[in-house]
Image 1 (cartoon, rainbow, N blue to C red):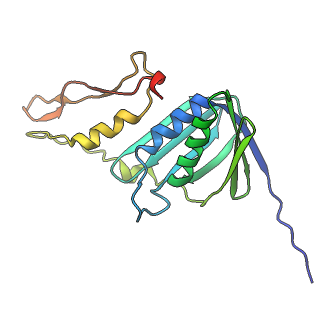
Image 2: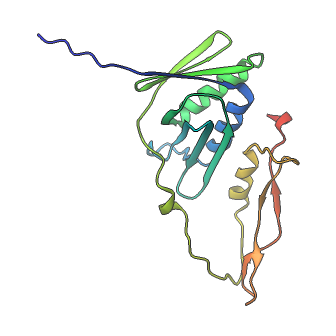
Image 3: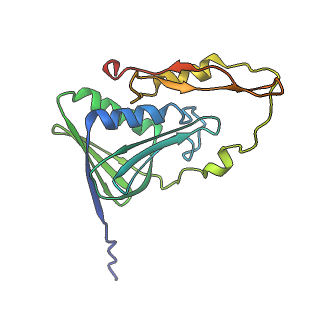
Length: 194
């Protein structure tokens, strides 16, 4: 009988509680939360590269991506299912006194620890869908524009680091009279309400 062992590399990083909360909360807005969601679209993607932590999600209609500076080792992109993101956010909220959260990846599992409490989640191994397929590069004039209030309102849940805690959605008018953009619509959540 042969015993095979699989070598696991541990990647561990410590991140400020508020920063992780903001990144996960913001990206979660665009993840597919339906019961029939495929894991690739029903996930938040997290990675660390070149001193930056990156969180992103898409449901094919929305794309939210957030990046922040961090002093941590590189970590390959992982996808965390929506249900597990909610468990992590609950752990963060229940441990308000914890200033930092530690994430430790070992193979296909991720351990999240805060102030002596921890949880382990299993990773699916999916990668964020390619952005070229998501972003339409052609621009066409529109004779009118209508906005889905629920869709636009969902972006109000995305924490913002702008000076006035708002995210801007801009539209501009073209010279032919069609609308390719308009005035600014301000949405955002002040950090003190999170």
